[in-house]
Length: 173
Ligand code: HEC
Image (cartoon, rainbow, N blue to C red; front, side, top):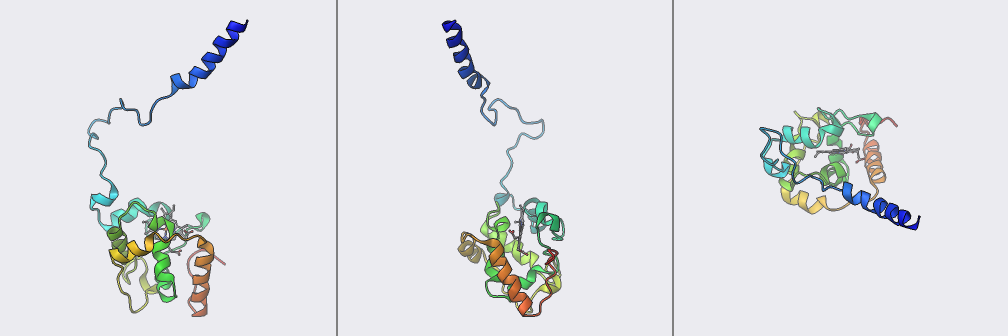
């Protein structure tokens, strides 16, 4: 009886080890025609539109229309307003979707300069003067973690309201 118990216990302890396998499986083969390892997005050299589709559109949707149901604000025709309030320029770099993305500093500067165009996503929300972001500026701000994002964003929105800017970010009140 005692032996049975010991053998049973040993089996129970050994079972997870027997089933364990490393992930990814070192013996796994690439699908035919798909042998080359993927190039990291920061080195792939895609244009802004492609980087946007790969890194941002999953949440912001194809044209920056956002999704209220998922708490993603509309950038289309609105995001440029952040440049009109103090701290807004930095906020646009510090939001986690951007600052923590796999894109490098130069790509993020390009991405923001591309989003923030009068004939682009930001559209008419852009201020008359806009100094493009540089990779150095992104590098300097990107790692400054936003510890209280809703409060920070709320203050920026309140500052816009105080300037008489209509809050058309698709989030409601
Ligand atoms: C996982 C979902 C997600 C991804 C991916 C994402 N974002 Fe966001 N983004 C959000 C949400 C949600 C907000 C609103 C603020 C917050 O809660 O972070 C936001 C806010 C922003 C803002 C500020 C606008 C505002 O109204 O608050 C900018 C600019 C922005 N994102 C750009 C980007 C870019 C560029 C990318 C791709 C590199 C990206 N985001 C990837 C979810 C995402």
